[in-house]
Image (cartoon, rainbow, N blue to C red; front, top):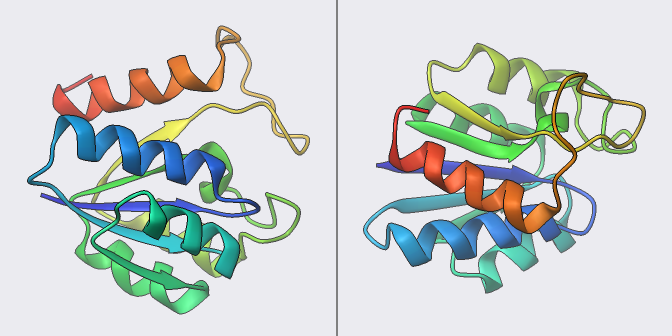
Length: 134
């Protein structure tokens, strides 16, 4: 299974996703793409199999992924303080891959009706979704 994990800013969510997925599904191939080099570096240190930085890698990897994971902002143009470009959000949104998004209520993007959980619980929920049909 090819899993694309996309993150921006400090890469903290992506790092935790890589760690959790590797712990439960070590056979999965994880491609980590950061909107910036710090996010990419954090995910690579966490054990991603491959990594890249920037817009075009997100576009290309979105075509090849079976599953795309990351904070909900990765499908919202100009989110995450502008690090997610419209092209990135479109590529992820239009991908045939299954998307498992972490519902973080930040940067003026609020997901109504979602229970407020800490990041550790949200990461655990995302990995459970990866293992099941959710």
